[in-house]
Image 1 (cartoon, rainbow, N blue to C red):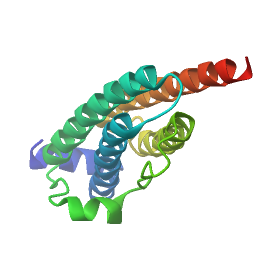
Image 2: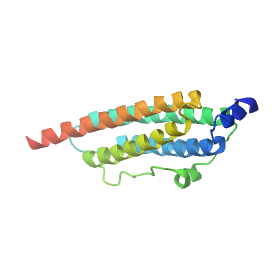
Image 3: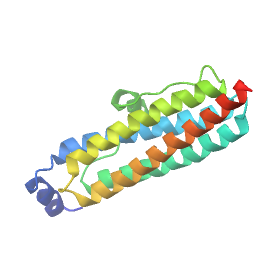
Image 4: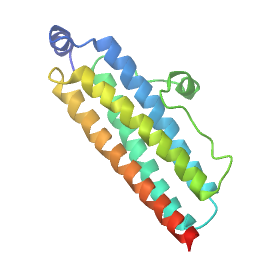
Length: 167
């Protein structure tokens, strides 16, 4: 997006620098979520671990796609995506929850918590750009839709495990 596009967004009331900062924080979240999903899928133990690991790997792939979408939009807005992984933890909204207890239920609960935070983050960004920046709005809405689906998927696997354990 050229300078004119940024000026137009500013004229519509978008704090472009604030938006870039919010997108970079979300970008940090996506990278940390990617790793949390990926490493969780590797170390997970317990009932239905194969099903849970497959879900985690699929979500990890989605998180990388989200990171790409966010980085592209940050560049279009004239910003710079986070350049160093050392800054991910400094900028994150949702943090990183290491799977130190690899029991499948615990790993799923950690990732559900992360998805719930992501949903809040993307709802907040939607509020910033609604009726002002349709490009960012559509990108963030697509990511938000995925995050809601991820949370639902993880809840379903967790419920299945709980049903098995009750028998």
